[in-house]
Image (tube, rainbow, N blue to C red; front, top):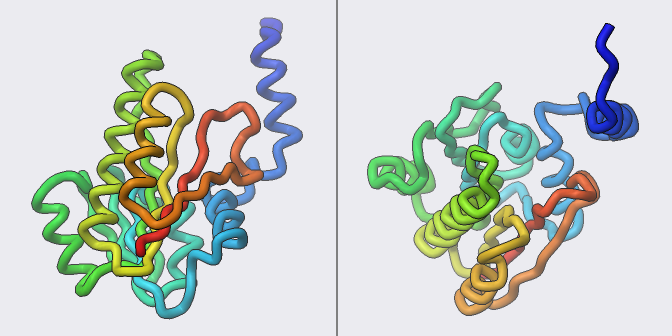
Length: 197
């Protein structure tokens, strides 16, 4: 029997201690639950646009907590909850944006993005791609977010982070940063919560 490497043993040990492993469609559900508790994002009258929905952790959490949910992703959802309008495609494509506009029918109170690029292993390339997705979410918020609405977007600290935060602060009344307890301690991910005037 082959011996485990030190890094493999560390990973297994971390997985065994991790309270979120194996408890839901994805760890993302717990991150959103924690963000919701802190920022009071959801509500029974709210219309929500979720970008980067697959595999469905956020969708599972959001569906019973809002009036209408429009979920968008390139990949299919593991499960589409009742009352959710799922649109499969790239949120930056014109035809997908037209479908979103019809499904929202009057704008959104909350735009959420848990989008992340497929990692290439090249940190510079991956960071640049991640901020392209942040820009896509900001554009979506600018197009569909109702006055007084909120944008929640996943970001990765590193090159481009300061510029993205400056752009968000210029376009929103207030921007807060949060790292939910369900995020791995060593992860560079944070969530920006931006309030529209």
